[in-house]
Picture 1 (cartoon, rainbow, N blue to C red):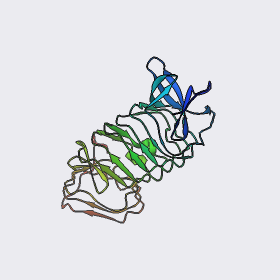
Picture 2: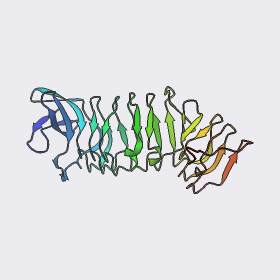
Picture 3: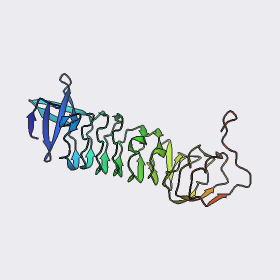
Length: 273
C-alpha cells in the first residue's frame, strides 16, 4: 500500500493493485474509515477506476490501522470502466448513489454479514449480472438492482428468511435457492416455499412454459403477473388457490392447462381479492 494525505474530500489515500482509493476517517477513536470520492460531491473524479477492485478490509495511515466499514455517498459515481467490486468483511453500509453510472459494473461480491444500503446505490448500473450475497444475510431487497437489464439469475443464500421486490427485476429469468435454506426453495428457476406448497414468484423474464410443481396448493397474488415471456402455464391438480388476476399482463400467453377436475378457488381476503 502507498499512502498520501490531502485536505479535501478525503483524509488519505491508498494504492491497491495499482488503483488509488480515497478514504475518509469516520472515527478516530474506533479507527474506522469509509471509501469516498476524489474531487467534490458535484464533480467526482472517479473515471480512472477500471477492471475489478477489491476494497481492503484495513488500511494503515500515520502509523494507525483503520478498518474500512463503509462506502460513502457517490464514492464510485461515474466509474464507467469499473467491472467488478468485492467488499471486505468489515463493511457495514453503502451510502446513496455510491456506484451510480458504473455502466461496466458486472460482478459484485458482498461480505458475509448483511449490509445497510442507501438510496440508488446501483443507479444506472445496467450491466450487473453476477451477484454473490453473504452467507449470513437474512433479508434481500432486490429493488436496488432494478436498473440492470443483464441480471438473469439470482442465487439465494441458505440463511435468507425474507425476499423483497423480486418482480422489480425486469430481466430476471431464474431464481436459485441454496438447498440448506429452511424457508425457501426453487424449482426450474421459480421461487417456492420450502415444501413447494406455495409458489411465491416467477421471474418476469421466465421463458416459455411454466409447469407449476405438482404439490403446490397456492400461487400467491402477483406471482405470475408481468411474466411477459410465458407462453404456457400448467397448473397441477393439487392447486387450491389462485387469483383471477394472475394472468394479466402476460402478453405472450397462449395456453393455460388445468389438471384439476374441480374448480380452483380465487384468492379472497375479507371478501376482497
